[in-house]
Length: 235
Image 1 (cartoon, rainbow, N blue to C red):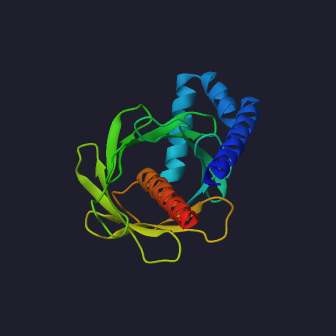
Image 2: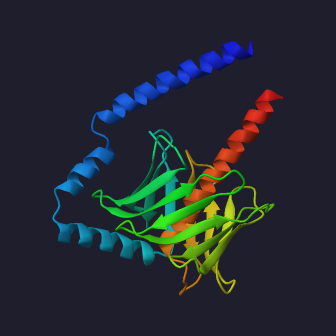
Image 3: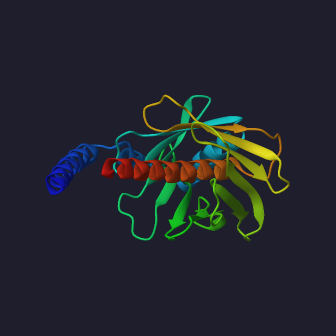
């Protein structure tokens, strides 16, 4: 019986994947954005990226929404309910997940690459030019999610620690333990929708770092919940 269920599930999953792949090949937003980006002059690309980063860094509230169906993880980044960027994850993972943030025109704003580890999660952050400009590292053996946010020189910029809540919630604090950003996941939303609210007028923890921290924490939490559901089904 278990073998039949497993076989049926794999067949359905394969059919769904092929359908999504076919639909995505027929003019996906990512492909359109990449084509648009390739037609831009270097100065136009630079201006587009700087404008998007400035909008992000000046935001008091940022919303990130995960697509329900996509090839690889896909997120929208919104400021004042206006989409300013997208985040796309690689579909085939080898040594860890890789995510790239792009402007609406398809220009790269930054990226992060998660390092495959058995016990905890680490990610390297990169700027728009592909230069390493920081890292996010999960604390070993912590009961709650807790992460350390570092700059390019591996100096501590801030921490992110899960709050006691019915859904995913966390405070991002600066190196002086002041709350800089607050992450909250919405209860009722199709897919994952999280808000990132700025709590300090001035902080060394950038909005870009706060967004990467939110996406990483959400993906880890989602994977953990799926594992729990699988364990319940096995029981």
